[in-house]
Length: 334
Image (tube, rainbow, N blue to C red; front, side, top):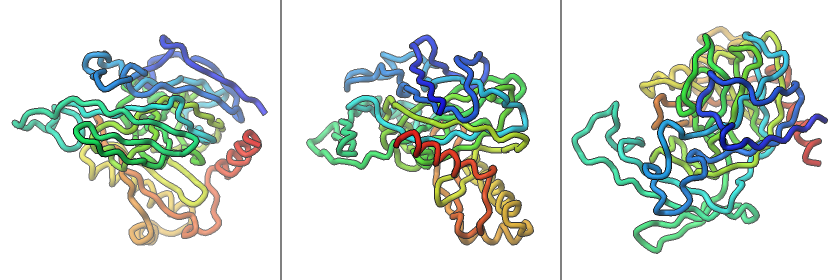
C-alpha cells in the first residue's frame, strides 16, 4: 500500500485550477493523507475577524494541490475516493457578506436595498460527539447540529491552458459545494491536461443544500483520499458514486441550465449503462431520480442529478473503481 502524506506550506496553497505546476506526483493506487485549509485560509478565527479586514481577495478558498497522476492523459478519468474527512480544529466559522449569497442583491443581481451586514458565527466542533454547536449572535439560542463533513471544492486543471478561480464550478469540477461529496464517495473527473492536476479544499463540517448564505460551517480538514486512473474513458462533467447511488453534476448560470446539464448527463449515462433508448432512460430518470442542490451563490451554480443503482440493474461503472477503492480504503483503516 503506497501512502503519501502532504501538508502544504502557506505559500504552496493554490487559488486556481490550472496555471500552476504540480506540487507532487502520485501513482494510481496511492492513498493521500492531506491537510486542507478552510475557505478563509484560517484567518477568520473570532467574531471580530471580518473577512473584509483579515482576508485579501482573490486569495480565498485555497486548495491543496495540484497533484500530477502518473499516466493521466486527456480523455482519461481520475477517480478520487474519499476514505475519511475529519475536521482538523475544534472550531469552525461561517459568515454573511454584503453582495454575496442567495438572498441578497449581488453584482449580477442588482438591487436597491442595502447590502447584508458582514457577520461572523463561530461553531464549536466536537468530533468525538459528532456535532457542530450553533450559537446565535443576537440571542442565547444554541443548538447541536450533526457533523456531516464534506469537501466543497475538488477538481482538475481545465482544458486549453485555462486557469479558473477555485470558487468557480464548471466541467473541471471546482467549488460545487454539494453535501453529497462526503466520506465514502468516489468522484470521477475528466482529465484535460497531462497528469490531471487535481486539487482538494474548502472543507465543510456541515452544509445545507444550496449553501444559501454563501458559506457553510467552514473547517480545516484532515482528509484521506485514494487515487485511481481509468484509461481511455472520458467524463464530460464531474460524477459521483456512493454505495447506493450514481450522481451527475452540472454547473452554470442560470440555475435551470445547471439542472439541465446534470439531468442530461444522468439520462444519457443511464441509457449507456442499461441499453435503454434515450426516451426510455428519460422516463426512468424522470420518475426515479433525485435532484439535490449544490451551491446557488458562486460565479456558477451547481445541481446534482442522483439515481439509485438498484433501478439500473447490476451494471458497474468505471470498471468498478468505486468498489476497488472502497476495499483499498477499508484495508487502510483496518
